[in-house]
Length: 129
Image (cartoon, rainbow, N blue to C red; front, side, top):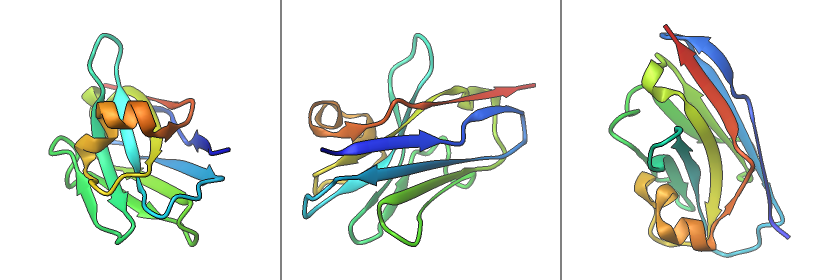
């Protein structure tokens, strides 16, 4: 049974930083695409960042240069360092793992991820002025 657990959200002022963590357990597929999507109230899901089994990383244009995605010492740990946070970054952030060979930030918010991916309960990020 695959389990995904996120942590690290919180409230911060604009310009501040947060680091989100995600641990995935029980994942035994030979391929993976892991990353984050976010969803603000009343808005569509937005893929934020993704990393594949070859450690190729893709970012949404809205976060490129501000967010950094990385693995921990073990590949089942995933971190999202978020710097220079903006009010528009406010959302619930979800970690996702998908047995998928096509892997990009947009993949995280795709129907394929919703149908076949494993995700956690989410962690809230709130950025205020």
